[in-house]
Image 1 (cartoon, rainbow, N blue to C red):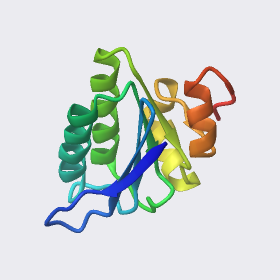
Image 2: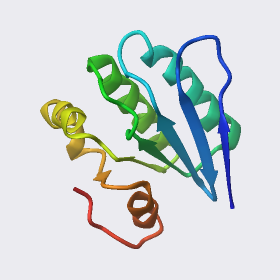
Image 3: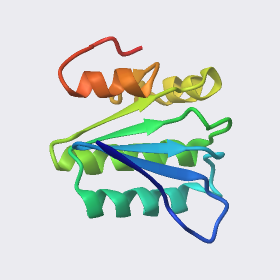
Length: 131
């Protein structure tokens, strides 16, 4: 079972969460830059604290632009989840965003998958085909 819900807020963030078993899927549908990253960080941290998921999937399908503050947001959430012995992965990363992640070196720490389904499968001990 999973539950889809959005987080209400006063900013222009389009952010949805899906809780599936012990995984929190964060669907980001906005630019991830210095204008949005702090709000996104607070919301994701709040959902992690509320539901205490073992793992987190960042779904970047709706992200068309990202700057270095987006990298910081992802790395901070990765470190938080690692403290709880969990795993963070990324899915649906567009080529222009993937390039930024590769240049930053984040892809050496956080696996990327072509779909949320493949990311979830990897967390359940199935597929190991990270890109």
